[in-house]
Length: 428
Ligand SMILES: Cc1ncc(COP(=O)(O)O)c(C=O)c1O
Figure 1: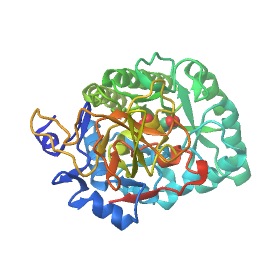
Figure 2 (figure 1 turned 180 degrees about the vertical axis):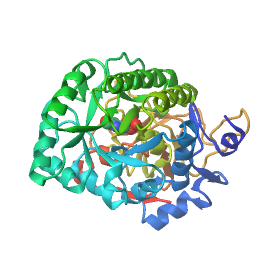
Figure 3 (figure 1 turned 30 degrees about the horizontal axis):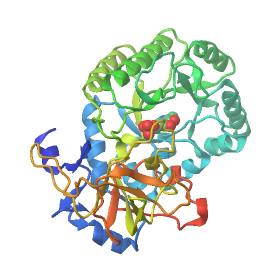
């Protein structure tokens, strides 16, 4: 940790600390605004609180890794909250979207159409037509999608231009979610790309971009670096052979976030080294190509916290349950039911009784030997935000913070399940 990180880090027990927020006394805050004040202004809990400064710091940290000229794209799916998207639009170089709805969000946030790419399997004729009308580049994930783009262009009297998503032929170890290598609904198999490029050329289509997204939630920098080197090598090979002349190559990202106990923050050094090599190779062999890196959760997860209020303490056969007003319907990922194999806790804390890190003494003031389960209001045992956490002191009215909640939260959860109120969201 750097000195600044140490000064700003908030200890989260056996979870990696976070520097995305501040403390006023022992209370979680954004700048000098405490969560008590923010919750009151927002009209109550449950509430997603995002720190604009936290996002800005993370974007700046990523930019510091990127060689000059390498562009940073944000994957809107990670968090499409309008105010956050507007803040992001001024800080990154483009957005990647996954539906016609996200195209609208991106345009409304002020991102110019030519800086938006549209990936995703299963695009409809209407979505491709909408993207074409808006001037958004469609990333074809199959030969069939390429045909859809050609037809939409013909109907619109526009030139037929598309990007291709490549399913790279690589072994990804340690990815939370593999999205490349092996059989996949995402992208066109690397081996098939030369034939698809030839077909596109024969049909008079221009391939404007090559898009590699090999995985998500990867916490080993060396794994990401190796994958990016592989993708860059393939792109340079095809360009060198004259098979395509893309304006951009998106090397993907997959940068992970330490959600669970014992996980460490991503080591970005190998990625920076790989990108420096790749940028130099492109500079020498394909100098007009714009290189892109595309990140979702890494830019926003840490800058978000989910705040929920304690309603009740309940003991059942000797076990303590802290019942709160938020849960699975807003933040499914924290309940372990969003793709995790083993249920592990997100960092959960008493939002008004946190301690700053002082050198090696990383303690939460809430640390106690007695434990409790933090459970939500849904009628399912799956609605558990923290199992066996050292927060047995919590009383009705207290605020519970679930950290690393800024990505795949509200819009990746079954909000209408059981008809509870939608969640509030605020960017401070
Ligand atoms: C094409 C594409 N880009 C970017 C992402 C974002 O991944 P992450 O949030 O892990 O960075 C995804 C995730 O599914 C994706 O499918």
